[in-house]
Amino acid sequence: MTAFIVRRLLLAIPTLFGVLVVAFLLLYVAPGDPVMAMVGERADEATIARLRAELRLDDPWPARFGHYVASIAGGDLGKSYITNRPIKQDIVERFPKTLQLAGAAMLLATVIGVTLGVFSARAPGGLLDRVGLAVAYLGISFPVYWVGLLFILLFAVTLHWLPPSGFGGVRYLVLPALALGMRSIAFLARMTRTAMLDALGADYVRTARAKGLQERLVVGKHALRNALIPIITVLGLDFGAYLTGSILTETIFSWPGLGRYVVNAIARRDLPAIQGSILFLSAVFVLVNLITDIAYAKADPRVTYG
Image (cartoon, rainbow, N blue to C red):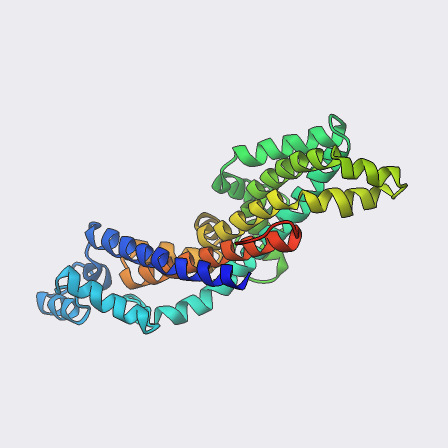
């Protein structure tokens, strides 16, 4: 396991370097001038020239790229053009809020989706199974921004149960977490149902029942544990996607996380903020995938890594 972890971490280095190269090239060939976004159209030519020199925007691309790589290697993600604060400081402030939102969404998805899948598999074709399949189809079909707006209209505007947006206590977290987790609830319900149906029809489950074990032990200890591999795959991929791709949800609900920070940086052409955030989120996604692979071996001892 240690050798596998070390090998995966070493393989992550060229992956992240590739992300850095792509992000740098795409942002510098995109239209727009970050200096004009900073000072506005009425600024004089001397001010514009001075800022471009300070930000190294007049340097050749290879020189700018070499300077950026050297800064990254030293642990410096640069400073924001707009706020003039270190990108690292902005990420430290914003990412815990994104992590909170992603964790809440994943918790809701795991509890609701896995529970629906297990009970659907125990009585295939029954009422609960049909309800679970309906929820799964609806969750997969509707985009997150539509679900988020629908939740705001229903629970905030019409029923006045929850706040429509903002950051605060648990009440502010419910709607964005549920909107973000709807697709995972759907996928987990379908995946759990399929995996549980296969597990419940296996010989070891029939043997456990023949021994007189209680049904809850047969389902929870034997069938569910052996069905965990595809469930862990969905959980790992979706959690990584939540941490790195909750931009729409954070924008709809005015959640002050890293996704909304990236949106604002793109709108204002804040190149260092965009590049630093992309690189950080890519590293997070690689780490989540590594943790998912390790969880395979914990869930099923038969899984080995050579």
